[in-house]
Length: 398
Image (cartoon, rainbow, N blue to C red; front, side, top):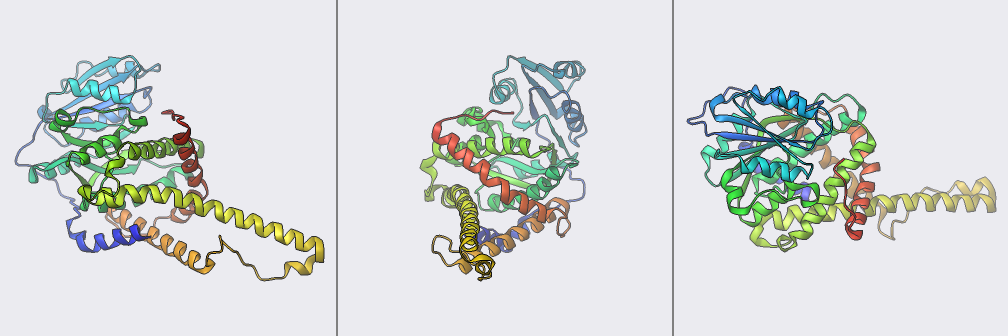
């Protein structure tokens, strides 16, 4: 709850710094950019991804695309070859060895001063790159800029509730960026100065969460990361609960392991909000949600058991007593109050995030299903992630 209050205070203090530009932007200069797109079995989405990049409003002579195939076994290579003669596109092929190695192959062959990375199932808004580049041109200390990720064309209920989640995430990332606390540069088109990789090295496997690890490494080297709230990239979201579970398990597993690897940053004032708030609160939230969820389940089962015993002893009259819980002998009313306040702040975050994404202040239709479904399933991928970390079990990409 403290973190949510902190975000609201930050919003009130710094809301004027959140950019929401509708008009076309002209830059004083257009530095050359290479976008690296790592691919593994992406035949269904890669063509749309490339076409979105070719439609970006940026001078063609300064905008290049490196497509890297990581040993695909489907028709990805055939799609690649349709672009083999395109002047903006270079093709690279390697044996399957992981996303981070595909990104590094693109890095090794990039000669431009700016490098971007894009997942092969994401699609870029035409104005996003230009809007992101304004940050670099206005502040030489900014080393990376991340855009807003939006769920592309949600069809299933699970995708529609992720749309709500991504809106809330947009608000969270924006607030963290305003206080230099972003702990991830997601694969939906972060742009880096090339000197980042020259100084701290390329991407690492990092438990299949290389985008989180590179951000922590940047912070450890005191490199500034910004968030561009009006640069939009649309991404394909999991369509079902099992697919969502697997993705979030990987994210959670990677986050916990990366925090362990960079534990020297925890509660370290040298790293500001990241060390004192972002990373600690992330870990506390994981354990707190798991504790609260299973404690509620335990008390419900205990209540049912007690009523069953009463019924067997005194009959139906034993079920008339007032409904009450004892949550670890903690004041139930206080806990309920805290939970209600947390949900209220979550709804406010969703509304404000929706405004960042759509420039409209509204209550998203699937907010209630999102809060119910995630409250029921998120503790399970969190618990499994902790178990995998404790037992050194890795999580697969897919």
